[in-house]
Image (cartoon, rainbow, N blue to C red; front, side, top):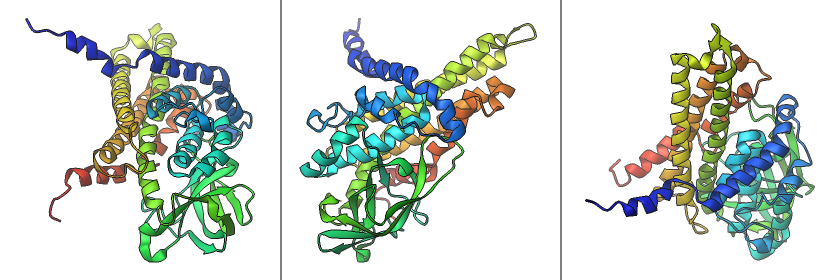
Length: 402
């Protein structure tokens, strides 16, 4: 008889260990108790609760991947993903703001900044006393954000002078610290881009407008304007014309982090749908007793569990990425695949969830409607579905004659 002991020992490859489960449970408990009550008002009024970020910081839920010496938790990307998953279940708009702050801004500064920059900016970002954002996308530069970038940075003594604009910037209207990309050498095209830390209040920088969105309405999104904005040369991150490496490495981590955001939303949609199917009665019995409703719930469950498996696999694969790695190879393909699948599957889950809820799911004020309106963004942000397919196919067909 074959010995299956090894298989039993390895079964936790597909589960969270005790420490990871505790991280998820703590984030879930905090978000349920502190953030859930804010979600409806945030969506209805596009309201931003100023007290939320400091409270998140006080509970140790910022700076997950940042060492303790800079104010962080000193954990890995898997832990960060679990915090995000738990938060997304109860307030997906705040969870999106968390990604822009913790992953796109703070983690990028840690991975690519020098020690002086880390010590200056990371403690306040990790505590939630300051809000972070990343400025990449422009009015004329979306999927081709690097090649079509028009924002420029010109060296002038001890400063760089930035001119241009950024759009669709999550946390933009409320951010205190922003990692902004600009062209420092037009002749080099995409390879002439640099990254800068810009602070709110710097002369020549302003929020041009706050944008109204279909979903994630409580997450503040805006257009940023730079008009002869003078940024100290010491705020250059990673060296001049090193922006491409920072962007590409950061994009893989961002895509890995979108999957747990989708997972949390899909989990909550399934939970609400099961509860509704048990309590909503038609023809004198719960609608969950009808096979058509059971079929929808079963399909939702399968989608949620496959999102979960893909999400955890990619978080584990991306966690060991060294500074400067990513943007190419298997991990580039894998992160693109995970976010593509998670976004599309979450869309399917929410479509079924609205169907289970019927008319109640179509009403604006319902939680399931709020979740449904969130799904499309994940098929657009961090590279559209079409761009993700191009990345996957490009890696699969590498070396083929064109």
